[in-house]
Amino acid sequence: MLVEIIDNPIVQFCAVILVSIVVSRVLLRRHRAYRLVAQIVFFIALTGILLYHDIVPYTPAPPESSVSMRIFLGVAKAVWWVNGAWVLVGFVRVFLIFERKPREGRLLQDLVVGVIYLGAALSVVSYVFGVPIGTLIATSGVFAIILGLALQSTLNDVFSGIALNLGRPYSVGNWVVLDDDVQGRVVETNWRATHLLNGTNDLVIIPNSALAKARLTNLSSPDETHGISITVRVDPTAVPRVITDVMRNVLLSTNSILKVPEPTVTIDSLDGQALQIGLSCRVKDISMVATAKNEIFDLIYRHTKSSGLKLAAPVGSTAATPAEPTSEGTGQHTGTPWRLLNNIPLFTPLTEDEKEVLASHMSRRTYHKDAIIAEQDTRLTSLMIMRTGVVSISRKEAGRSIELTRLAPGDYFGEGGVLMGAGEVGTTRALTYVVIYEIGQDCLAPLLHDRPSIAEELGLIMSKRIEAERHLFSSGDLLANGARAGSLTSRIRHLFQLQHG
Image (cartoon, rainbow, N blue to C red; front, side, top):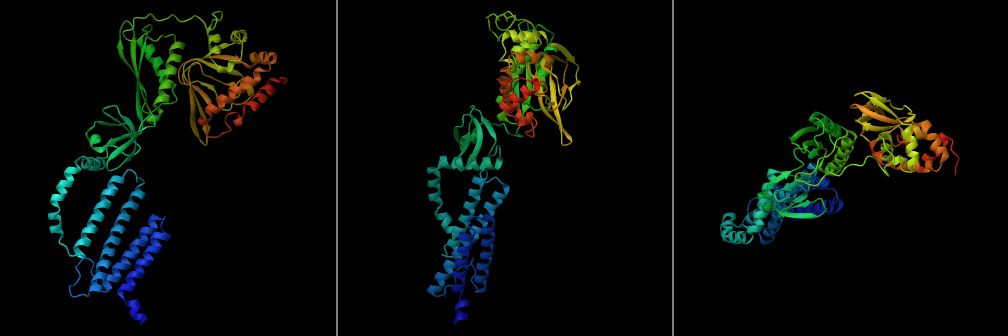
């Protein structure tokens, strides 16, 4: 009796189904790949049991079978077709996981899964219930036409979505712009619509039918880099070659743009009112556009001012350009050294008279292109303030040279050596002809001895600059050993032998 029970197809079938449910739906519920393997094994076992008992799932049941056997055969065949559909669907889903684009392929995945389930359902209707598929399809044609007319707009979106997924004009993560200036990053595509996340962090939902007809610009293709174009109008008070050289220095000193491909400067027009120049460059992705533009505009102002050039009035403007003041502040201080000091945050705590004393002791130095201004780890005894030109600071680390930053007019370096006795974090090299003004450590010493409280303010300012520039370095101990404002102040006091108080 036990052998007969074990050899019974109904018992074997129920046992396989029960084990399949426990293993696939309970034990391996969170492991899709292993669950797919288990489903394949159980499908093979189920197929073997049916064929062993001469039950062919893709043929109708013999008419001479008993009622109970016909019911079992119908259930067994239906379960076999459903299990086969699950295996195919599992293949589709695991394939998309391995592709690492499950959200991007959602529509195509759903389409394939729908075809699989439709095929399984038609097979069950044909081989279990014995209904001719051709007749069923023919009789459902009228219903399909009525349903298609009722869902015309929805079907338009669905088929447009299929066309967009097959054509792949964009993918999830790309930044796109439509012809009506709607733009954003693609976060999802589904049957009905495509979801964009715009610059103000709002979700824009566009029907696929509208998107398929729109003129679309993919800002993330063929790669993530994005171009920037800026137009500058300069008074024609110098020859165009000099002005274009200044604009090249602007792009050369910008840290936010890509160095390859090389940025370009072109003269767009020239008349009696202005020389119009176009600056073109690229950034690594569209998120850097605002940062790069802000930096470029800041450098345009600094370079033109340091070179004695003036920005022209807007086109069609009749207002007279206001005359620039001959000096900063109250008008009693003049000269380039004082103006440089007045624009550096490091010397904000000083009074105008104290700045005047320092300015009188500043010395001017020039460096030709490619000249080494300071080697890495060299301790500078003078604060170096950029007057004109561009310099690069690069560090040799782990057998390779890494460019840390580039400096432009108004920037300074050497404060670590002057105020704390630290070495330079990298080698400073002139990329163009450079003019620098120096403030020696011996000039700062009397000022700090007269006002020891300035050490605390200088320590706080240097700490803020260190934090702002920390991302430039690969190790945290390069900038004053990651010192806080308090420890920086202590080092300044120790170096200049200042009394606490």
